[in-house]
Image 1 (cartoon, rainbow, N blue to C red):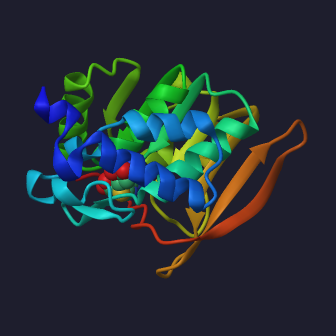
Image 2: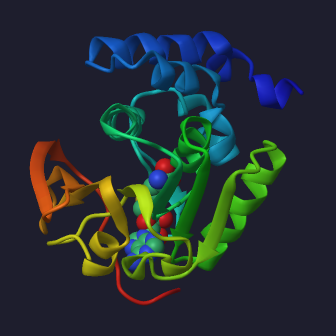
Length: 218
Ligand code: SAH
């Protein structure tokens, strides 16, 4: 149980400090701040890095991938929560599962796709251990989406590409939103796409840095 609650640098006090920091950086959604306050990020990273889990930085999770920076996770979640329904949400690039766990608390049902089998398996185990039961995990290429469960109210892509994959646009409900880092080299633009009755509207939100959205499956 001490594990779950955390002690010292992984304690509730550390999470509260992170929440204060996110607030000062412009996160205003109390729902999102509350979820960050109660989600044990230290359980999603290797034990050796647990003491750094509540720093506002990305950290390695193995396989050349990273757990996203808490500010970016909160900002992306806030945009989705504040722009429409969150009944069915698709996440691409589940990684260690921290973002999935956050989404699980603000959405009815989450579907997440991860291309690295070992990460997909670890994600499944972590969410099971945390008793989070409204996330379905799939090992596969997220660029294809998950047609069997479409349309989605919201799609969150946690890896960057030059453009948003067409299948993801097609699997968005009318009134649905997708958020994704768009751009090729190092720095990308976090982009919000809304599907309307007539088509798609795109809005650039802020500069971000994500790992690339890759082809094929490992
Ligand atoms: N939200 C995650 C971020 C992980 S980094 C977290 O907080 O841990 C991005 C993830 O996207 C990596 O795990 C990477 O393996 C995955 N990824 C990259 N290309 C992908 C693709 N085509 N389909 C599914 N996942 C992909």
